[in-house]
Image 1 (tube, rainbow, N blue to C red):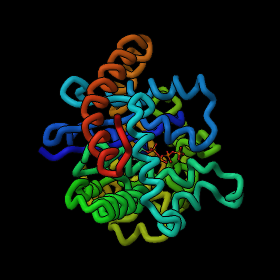
Image 2: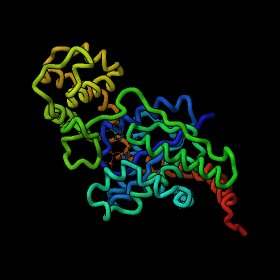
Image 3: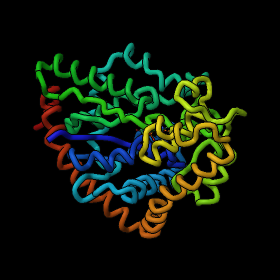
Length: 333
Ligand code: AQP
């Protein structure tokens, strides 16, 4: 059976982009694949995280997965730091990947910004850890947002080079990206050219999974728009990133295509459309958020899911990392 690995960082402010671009798709995928869904807390610390907030956020992301409908009994939900083989394999991949490959990673450039010299080494080597996450379980498919495509290509390059260097043809499969049609990129509510992000300093830029109905409606009302009415075809969205984003969010939440959503609101002003969008967002998110609140009040259950998931993930990883160490030539006496 094909195996999926996917992860979300526990960096706080889990948002609508993470839900529409990742978690919601996972719920669909679990019917056809064997899945490992990971809260990647080791990735999270590539930028500073307050330790108590990191723990809380790890639980929150796990709760969001469970509340959204991921079946933690049939599949595996765990946090990365509890399976030491991720770190062990990442080190081996640090020695397989080439500096030139990492230098091309656009996400590092974006995240490090102008203050590159002050970025952590972990942030730079992040794609090697991501490759380790996937290949440790010999995952065959990885659901990724557009923003992660380049990292997955690097994981394939690493897998290929390891197989070649050590003469172990086909040891690592070359994982395939799975990009989803709608909402692969939910954009900031304050700037339609920037992706919705946990780390955006403005809370009004994102709808978080813990926002209540009034906050969701307020953020949508305050979302940036332009003065024109909504267009009657997709071409009319050119040069209107905020309109395109809000219509895209509506389409994703209502499980319709962008064209159908455009047709529905053609010629409307943003005032009316935003009211419809707010009602839809609240209706879709409220049941998940209610379940998340219930789970967060029962931390013992979330922790038990993570503990059980980590045990099962370790059991899968151990024979594979043992074979890798043997292949590399690490003496085990
Ligand atoms: N805006 C987005 N639209 C669609 N999908 C998104 N994802 C993130 N933002 C959007 C998808 O969510 C998954 C987990 O992402 P992540 O938390 O591991 O890291 P990220 O992509 O760096 O997310 P953020 O929100 O931008 O976090 P920060 O601000 O901490 O860097 C991935 O599948 C991602 O594609």
